[in-house]
Length: 317
Ligand code: NAP
Image (tube, rainbow, N blue to C red):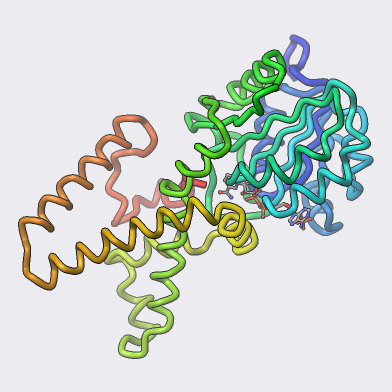
C-alpha cells in the first residue's frame, strides 16, 4: 500500500473475470483502495479469486459486497448489468461512484440508470483493453497500461465524481476520454464488434467446409486463418450480449461492410488489379498509423515471436 491515502476507502469488484481480476491486480499494485471486496455469483469462481489473493474480502452476495463501498465496479456481461443494478441499488452508499466496464454503453445506461438511487454517481465506462481469455486467472496488472478507457457520463453527472474516476483509470495506466454512449457504441461497432463478428463468421465457415478437411484448416492456419481464430476464441456469453445490446450500430456497420465486400468481389471477378492494389495500399497505411499511435508494436506477428506470443493483447473490446 502506498504511503498516501488511497483514492477509495473500499472498492467493490462485482464480477472477477478477466477485467475484474486485472482491476484487482492494478488496484493492489497502485494502492488505490483501502480495501478490495471481491464478489462473484458462483462459489467456484469466488474460491479461485480467493486462492489468487485478489481481494481482502470475498462475497457471493452482491448486496453485501457493495455495502460501505465508495467505488463499485460492475465487470460482468452487459446483459447482466441491469438485473445486478436492481439488486444492489438499494444497498449503495450515498456518495458512492457506480461504474461498469461493459463493451457497449447505450443499453447499460438504459438498464442500470433506473436503479441508481439519488446521491450515487453512476458513470459508465469501458476500458479498450482485453484478451481472448476469461476468468479470474486471466487478469494481469498491466492490462490497461497505455490503453484508452472511455467514460460516458450522463448529462447531469457530477464533474468531481467524473474527475475522481478519471484519476482512478489514469492510475491504472489508462488514457481516459469521455464521449456520449451512442457515439461510443458506433465507434466500437466498427473497431471491435464488426471484427469479432467477421472472425466468428470466417472461422464458422471454415469449420463447415466440406472440400477442405478440418486437419488441413488447422495444419495450414498460419497463412492467415490463425489470426481470426484468436478473436473467434473470445467469450461466447460476452459476445452474445454485445451483439444483442449494440444491434442497431452493428447492423449499420455490417450493411456498409457487405457493400464494400461486394465491391471487392466485383474487382476480383473483373480482374481489376488497380482497384485491389489501391485498397490494399490504403489499408496498410491504417496499420502504420496504429503503430505510430502506440496501440500496437511493430514486430512481425505472422511468425509470432515466442517472447510476445504469451501476452498477445487484443485491445479492442
Ligand atoms: P469474464 O472473464 O467471463 O468474467 C465474467 C464475470 O462476470 C465473472 O465473475 C462471472 O461470474 C460474472 N458473470 C457472468 N454472468 C453473470 C450474470 N449473468 N450475472 C452476474 N455475474 C455474471 O468476463 P470479462 O472478459 O472480464 O468481461 C466482463 C465485462 O468486461 C463485460 O461486460 C465485457 O463486455 C467487458 N470487457 C471485456 C473485455 C475483454 O476483452 N474480455 C474488454 C473490455 C471490456 P461467475 O464466474 O461467478 O459466473
